[in-house]
Image (tube, rainbow, N blue to C red; front, side, top):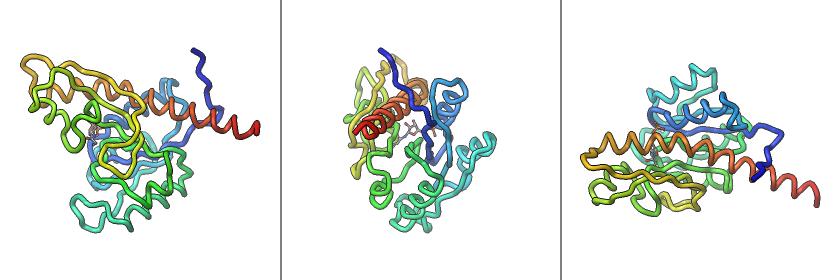
Amino acid sequence: MRTIRSHRKIRLGILGSGSGSNFQALLDAIAADTLNAEVALVLSDVPNAKILDRAGHAGIRAEVIDCRGFANKFPDEAQAETARALQEAEVDLVCLAGFMRLIKAPLLAAFPERVINIHPSLLPAFPGLEAWKQALDAGVTEAGCTVHYVDAGMDTGPHIIQAKVPVLEGDDYPSLHARIQVEEHRIYPLAVQMVADNFSCQTALCSTK
Ligand code: GAR
C-alpha cells in the first residue's frame, strides 16, 4: 500500500510527566526519517522530570506547566495556559507521552481531535494508572498497549493502533511493563505518522473542493 506523505513536517507538542522514553522513541523515529515530524515544544507538570532533560539534550524548547500546587488535578487555568503555549508554538498534534493528568476543555477544545495518548494496556481493558499492574493482578494471558485519540473520559477515545504482548510465566510488574514499553516505542511513531498522513489527506481534499 502506498503511503501519502505530507510535504510539510507535522509539528508535535509533547506532554509528559516522567522518563519520556516514548518521547525519545518519537525523536529516534524522526532522526531515522521514519516519522515526518518535528517536535516544537515539550511541556511537563513535573519540574524535575527526565523528559525535560531529554528535550534539553535534543535542543528542544521545554517548559514546566504550573498546576497551582495540585498533586493530581489539571486546573482549568493551567489547561488554558498549556493550550496557549501549544498554539503559540504552532503545534499541529499534541502527543501525551506518560502525562498523568486528565485533559479536558479548554485544552481539548483548542485541539479538537488533535490530542493523542499512548496507554499501556489493550483498551478498553485496564484504563487508568499503572495498567500493567492491573493486567498482571487480573491474571490475563495477554497485555499490550494502545494509541488512541483523547476525549474527556479516562482513556476512552477512539483507538488508532494497538499491539499485543504475551504475559509470561514468572512475569513481575517491571518485566511486563518493560516488554509493553518495547511495543509502545514501536507503535507510537507509527500512530503519529498515520495521523499525520490523515491530516495531509484532509488538506488535499480541502484544496480540491
Ligand atoms: C508509558 O508506559 C505510558 O504508556 C504510560 O506511562 C508510561 C510513560 O513512560 N502512560 C499512561 O499510563 C497514561 N495513562 P515514558 O515516560 O517512559 O514514556
